[in-house]
Amino acid sequence: MDDSERPSRAWSTTLAVAILGVVLLATLWAAGALSATGAAVVAVGGAAAFHALRRGWFAEHARREQRRIEAERAAEQRLRMATSDAAAAAAAIDALPDAILDIGGDLRVIAANAAARERFGARPGAEIAAVVRDPDVLAGIDDAFAGRETVAVAFTLAGPIERHYEARLLRPSTGAGGRPRVLAVFHEVTALRRVDALRVDFVANVSHELRTPLAAVLGFIETLRGPARDDAPARERFLGIMQAEAQRMTRLVSDLLSLSRIEASEHAAPTDKVALPPIVGRVVDALALPAREKRIRIAVDVPATLPAVLGDGDQLQQVVQNLVDNAIKYGRADGEIRIAARASADGGRVALGVADEGEGIAREHLARLTERFYRVDAGRSRRLGGTGLGLAIVKHIVNRHRGTLEIESEPGKGSRFTVTLPTA
Ligand SMILES: Nc1ncnc2c1ncn2[C@@H]1O[C@H](COP(=O)(O)OP(=O)(O)O)[C@@H](O)[C@H]1O
Ligand SMILES: [Mg+2]
Image (cartoon, rainbow, N blue to C red):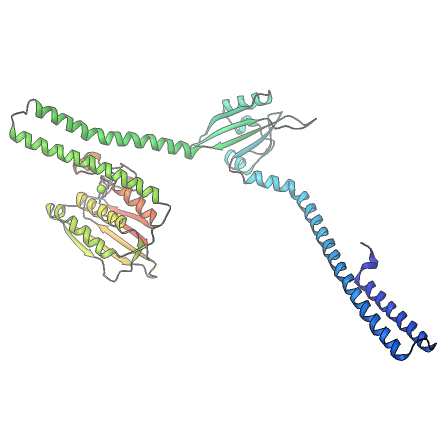
């Protein structure tokens, strides 16, 4: 950019032009070539014309100046980006969740990203055979150096928690004269494996749960058509058992359906305002009969002034129903069940507890109690008509409500299940 176009220079040019103009007019006036009025008219006209010209010139000048500043800024930015490109690439590779090892022809680590350093303890210079002690992966690395890239090798890292990986061994182009290198990329598939295992377990569990009552029903049908054909009292008894088994299968199917419905909606927290006292009342009424059969008294301490919670009324009723149902089934005959609810001091949460005086639950079972089909005593649960899904349903509903479930139990004394929910 030319210096003569800087504003300070422009001002001195203006001043010089103005002085020249005044001197010229004064000379013309002194020489009598101009009258005073003429000189004044020429001076004012000239000044106005010059002013207009200069404004146009300055606008153009300002635009050019703006463009110059923008171009300078863009150039600076390009420079900054170029110098930080290498650092940015390294940072990006470090941030990748996959463990990546850059291996040299001497079979030593050239570089390792953060995941590889953390999980495999890989350090530059370390022998690859000491970092990854897996014959398949090492053979894959040899193959890659020989020009045969391996698509995926299964690799398991032993430890307190086994981690499963799929390793890919790639030969990046190193350009002319570049030294040979192999990139080993370890993609973790532990979670996928776990889901697979869960699915297989789940199908096996459901089949088993259905097969037991089906086998019983089929057995009784056979007996009724054969030996017990004319035995009226036996027929009555067998039909009763068959009915109970069929009802349990129906409950199992409906529990499975509600579980999958709840799971499908688990990501969306419910938004209704729900009052807990009427829900507790309905559950106590519905379970009055089985409670009376075991001569269990249900004491309810749920104040009517309890703040409403943010929830789904039907699902919360299912939570209370499943907990009270368990308290009756596993509680002490002639004992008491206490249902109590309180708001937290800040009013942000409500805690609802269901306590029984049953035999309690040994500590080692507590953590697994909400797993599907987990029971302390499967035979007893089945005899009592249980599906093993009640607490799994409770857990999923509570999760959907962004609440918590706490289980306390003292073997021999009883158990208390407490659900905490956010208020509306
Ligand atoms: N109040 C309780 N007292 C003692 N054990 C309980 C109680 N509630 C649940 N359990 C144990 O947890 C298991 C799982 O409960 P749940 O998921 O409701 O299935 P189900 O009642 O159909 O067996 C029960 O089989 C029982 O062993
Ligand atoms: Mg139950």
